[in-house]
Length: 414
Image (cartoon, rainbow, N blue to C red; front, side, top):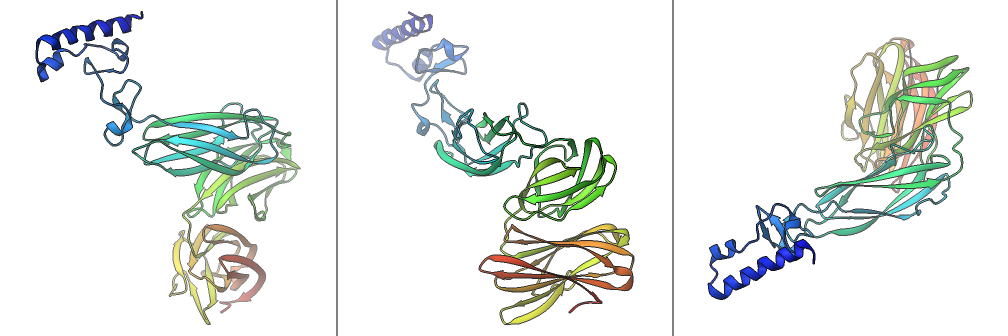
């Protein structure tokens, strides 16, 4: 017989004899409690609490809100939960883009789930992977099990490992999944800024600065962003004969996307999740760069509900909402307008606020938090008062379509 079981039986026998001769009071009951230092000192069905063996619960409903009944039958912090990879299975072969399904179990009001490249055995460094993030609703009184689908993940080479992490009030759970796929065909460079795949707030950023080191000097180095599921953004040429570059801006979109670097045909990708609060309206984001300090403004003509009106950042009126802008004049600048329109046509133009030299501008278009596309980039000779009529956004049935115009006029177009 195990020492723990023998000790427990001996003690309970002594308590039984005491009970037969003495009516147990509260003090008598306490005197009958088996002393302990750890749970292993107590018999089955009890745990060590404040130096004495005790039994507090049979299941979670016996415990205060926010605590669990543990295997020692004492109430304590809830268990961290569990992560199960349902598909694909461990060691499976996947396509270049594949879906994942997980089973998540936890007891807490909420939990945060992430799926990302594992820190070791993470595949080809230049094969891009867009990190996944989700906030899950739970229950503080019971463990809930739910399935989470993660669509459109990108393979990371011939062998790679993904890591799922779930954090809740009960703690943190980590689970890895190793998969195989075809060679990624990427390489030849290393991103030094951003240093790793990450999430960024696309509502506050129209562009992000990128730095990289190349394996060798390249005749032509280019950058662009490719939102997953929509057309790539404008391509910017970083330079020629480069083996590295620092702080090159590249346009970013709402949603999952890949920043691509091309150096004489060698490609390296960086996954970005452009998270942002969803919005029902149309968002227009102007970004520009110039050789000398410049100041540009968005100007909008809204045609909807059998009426039309114009607006800009300084005179938004009822047609627009001024969201934010950076200080100007400057070599780089941003300005964001929101247009609360459900049906209609929005004409978009960029006009100079100050006459300087040449500036290159582009406009990011987003509807309801979903990326639509870009207008531009387009060069504007602000010194002679040029304005750029960028195009139109046709909004209907919760969808938006871009019509590019790319015309030049002098002064405000409307």
